[in-house]
Length: 68
Image 1 (spheres, helix red, strand yellow):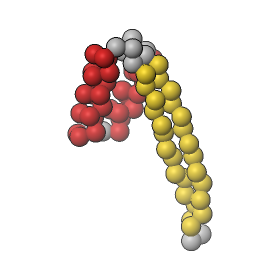
Image 2: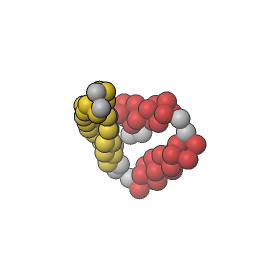
Image 3: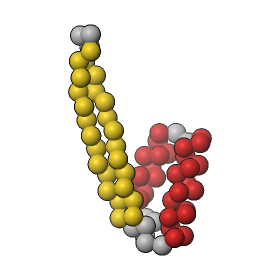
Image 4: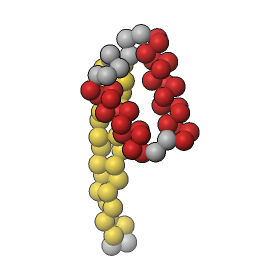
């Protein structure tokens, strides 16, 4: 599996206040269909009822290659 994380930052000033917007693009390439299904199921479960910490943990696991 290959995982690419592309962070983007944007600073803006609105009405005298400074804001930082952050966006993370996660690109995952899985080798097998089963691997893809497993990742998609876990991702959808986190979308429905997961926390940000759980989502970040999944990203760390994928980046570390524990799904290989």
